[in-house]
Length: 156
Figure 1: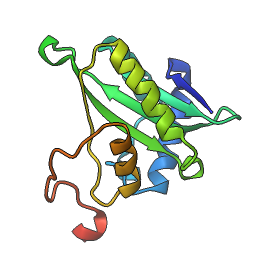
Figure 2 (figure 1 turned 120 degrees about the horizontal axis):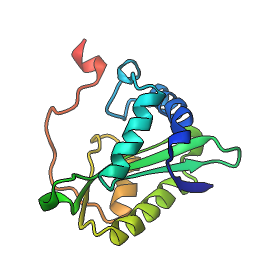
Figure 3 (figure 1 turned 135 degrees about the horizontal axis):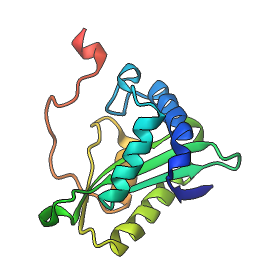
């Protein structure tokens, strides 16, 4: 497994990864039909993360297919540049193989080197696998936001 930082030429592979991840799980924030990003949008996000000193990591399998990714968004405002917001996803075929650990280990080293003091994320309450990973890497539950994310079955 290769963990690397995303570059502009990865945009097509990232788009394919995001669409596949959205089809595989309802534990991400967006429904598949809401993911309208094209390659140009992804290229712009990679550029923006670089400009704001953020991070976009990719996990590639032995064939070069993207099977996981992790982003850290960081504000360009100086008073909160020590904060980062994390989003992570791994395809079903690649779960339980240590990819999450590899992504978080790489992120933690990057955060230390870039003087991030606090990383945060949001996880659905019934996503126990992700919660276990996050706790393993030092994240703690600071609160539970009631009725903050609804699934389609709850709305219709």
